[in-house]
Image (cartoon, rainbow, N blue to C red; front, side, top):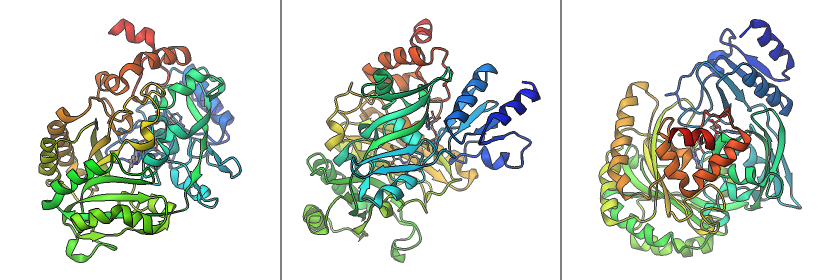
Length: 465
Ligand SMILES: Cc1cc2nc3c(=O)[nH]c(=O)nc-3n(C[C@H](O)[C@H](O)[C@H](O)COP(=O)(O)OP(=O)(O)OC[C@H]3O[C@@H](n4cnc5c(N)ncnc54)[C@H](O)[C@@H]3O)c2cc1C
């Protein structure tokens, strides 16, 4: 690549072009997971759609490996690539709420914290994840589950439209009526089909929620898990609760006596008033009174950022995941064995409910093919110290290997590392994989967008199968 070409590219951007010689380069190449250290040739910080179009043309003309970075949260580091071009969207940040239609138009570089902040003023929210620093782009395109899943479905179930720049640099709008095949594909198919510069979401009435964790000693974990597996499949949609093994952080609101203690917990979110919430959770409190609980009315954005302080950018992350249909007694016993051996303070295991409203669409209504699962399980090794990288990785792998036989087959694409293999991706999309590969062949026949959980264009896929 000639230096003149880079200079010309830079001249066309409203945003910034960061080269390795730039003093900002070291900071700009970082992603949320500090285990990832990739060295792109160029980072295009796009300010608008025109910049994205320019960057896509440049990447194609120079045959560069191209990654798309939204919030940079992908644990596999799929927002960055070695020796290629990063199309960074973090400057494309705006949130326009239409309170009459209850819709929200957001820029492709927003985080969920940006969106929650803007929608809360109108008593609205869009279903998303549980950490506010996560990017809207990656989370949405992979599916999106969080505290509102049981009431309002996955994030993709609330996506109404997307503005996109395709692999050939053309700009299209994808909705249920326009480019409907593309609209189907991006609701779970990840960043395979183009750069989404803007998302339009349906929002819902959510203002104050009653929410927070309840914790129990590990010797009660079997009882809690068994109670939870029965409860969550028939509970009202207004309540969401995920199960966790965790180590109690050494700070408020946790009492000192519990600091650093390994425990199990349920993190609740009830979209409504305290009295009905307490009625629903009363039987649990009587069955096994929690050792500690922090369940209280709070503004929804407070819940959404409750764990941000613990999971700050720059930690080491390694995770493994599966969808789970049934939680048998044997699986519970294995969970307790491995969950009791959390290797570090930040390491955890979560079981997120996939039921309630998330069960309404059929498996092929969107590419997200595990509507018949009950949970999405993620085993997460996390630590600030790079020297613990192998320890957290080995723990997560061992735990996952023990539980995988009890899983439903595939895993949530957003909970996979890089390079888990095509079999894992196929297992995740199940019968939807072929249709995704056909749509990929139509919109990105040369697999230009391949730094992702890659769906290869149909023709390429067939040659090598
Ligand atoms: C701490 C933490 C908590 C999380 N919690 C949840 C949770 O509660 N629920 C949940 O569902 N997931 C959760 N996730 C997983 C999360 O959904 C994925 O990590 C997701 O990839 C993050 O999106 P991002 O935009 O920040 O990522 P990035 O690393 O920026 O992007 C990841 C990939 O997404 C694609 N992409 C991103 N933006 C665009 C775009 N605008 N256009 C096209 N492609 C794009 C690209 O392929 C890119 O390689 C969590 C992750 C972390 C690290």
